[in-house]
Image (cartoon, rainbow, N blue to C red; front, side):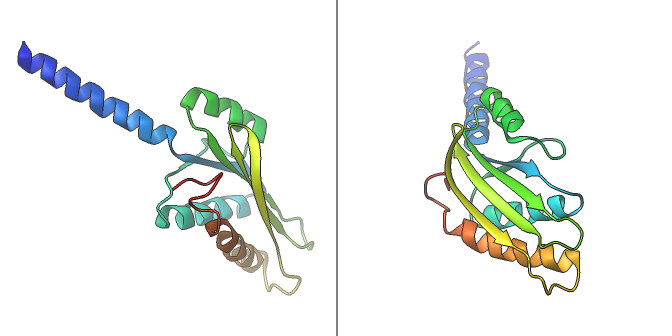
Amino acid sequence: MKLLVAATTIFAMFVGTCVAQDSAAVVLGGIGPTPHFQTVLDGIWDALSSSGVKVKVASGEGKARSVILEEMKTSGNTVLLYVTVTKNGGERGKILVESFVDGKKMWQEESRGSQFAGSAEGEVRGMLKSINEKIKKHIGGPGLPK
C-alpha cells in the first residue's frame, strides 16, 4: 500500500510539473500567406528555442489573434507572440510580431522586405533574419520570458 501511495505521489508530481512547464511556454501563432507564413513561424521558433525560450506553436493553420487568446485561457498559457506576414505579389513584404501578456500588448517589432530581393523566398528570408534580431532583444524581458 505504501508503495502505491508513493508511486501515485510521484506520478502526480510529474504530471503537475509537465503542466506547469507547458503553461510557461510562449505561444507562437498568427496569420499570413502560404508558404511564407510557415517559413516565418519555423524561423522564429528556431531562433527562440535556440535562445532558451520555451515555445509552443498554436495548433492548426493561421488563426485570428482573438481565437488564439481564447484557446490560451484553457491551456493556462499567458504569453502570445502573434505574427502577421504580408506578401502580396510584387509589393514589399512585411512581418509584424506583437507580444501579448494576458491579452495586453507589451511590444511590437516589424521588418519590411527589400524592393531589390531576387525572389519572394529571398525577401522572406531577409525579413526573417531582421525580425529575429529585433525579437532577440526582448528575450528575458516583459512579453518574452526565458
